[in-house]
Length: 498
Image (cartoon, rainbow, N blue to C red; front, side, top):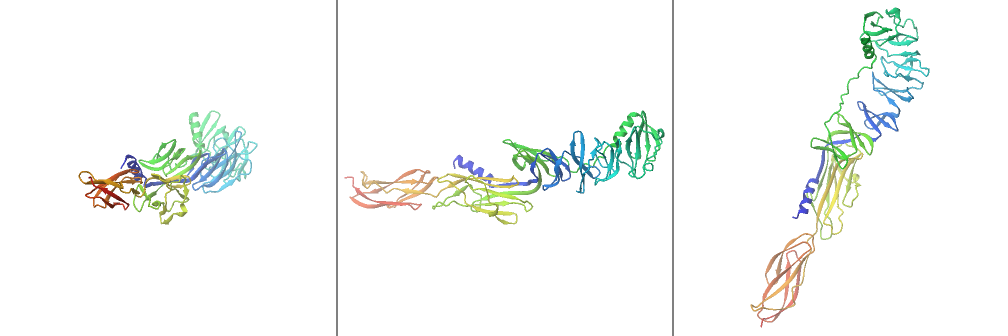
């Protein structure tokens, strides 16, 4: 076996079965300018500079119509547009999936953009602050010069030069729903939200903590006031997502494209522009053709198995009529995988969708193909690809050497007149031609009962001879027959030496 044949055989053995033990499929198709994980199965997506929310399975939760979308806090997120430095509120998104559209011109404060105790600080077009509920209805009308979130039943608001604490029923009866504070006769130039029953208050440079009954608990220093004010006003920290970023999958590249593997196991071959964040639940932000999508890696196996006459072989035989030996393609595709395609290049250079022609038996898909082989070609190449949503899940490229049938020709024995030598022996010869593309060894049998074995190289020839004893002038039929079945004969005249 020559070196080229050895290489073809080695490559073929590697290519007979192509498989992955894990499957990476699109959870969100690559259609977006940007994607960021938002909450659970939700992602922020960006198109034309605007943001929306999408869920695994390409389910649009919120169209990309917004300049900003805040994180979920206390069960709600906020979405809207920027008007210069102002944040116009347009939608309230509940974690339960409910979305409330806001039709009035309400603006969010520069900070503290979150619901607290089901109330949200907003301002109107005149810059006056108030509160709305999760469906956008007014709880406390816009009448304040500034306002902070409700916490523990009260919210600090500013009117004129002074702050006060109000409860949610303030509009029904302002005096009854204002907390009387025992601090500088109830006058406060600054006040923060309550937390753990205490709120920071100030009158110019005098600082203290008061409780929810309005009683002064103790004086504090300016630094303590600032820290407590900041801490109490801040949004609560949401429980960290169980889907943390993970490096369980590593990237590798070939020819400027990127693939994924886990240890030595390939998950997807290099076919992506790059990857973004990777998460512990197997979700990975991937960029393909400049667009962002989300891959989901799951356990499972997609494989391609190529057989010739029921076994793995790197050779295809051609019969005497020129028919190419068929190949059998076996694809293993898990039942949970949808919208897949099986593509076949049978040697003509084009991948064609053959999914509908495969016979399915549970997870096994089978198809018999006749490879396309150019005339007198010594080899051909087939390729089978399983893909889903543009992702190549398995790719099998198979190279075959083409084995043509033995084609021998044998010339008529000659010469037609031959003279014996001094030993009374006359030599007769024939030439055997090998028209096939591989060497062959045959036995040549003569009509005188003698035979010989001869090896003939591909597309080569060899001459074989035999001798006859000649004691008298004679003419006889001389024939040669090959073990492969070919034969030739001629009438030869034999002359004696004298």
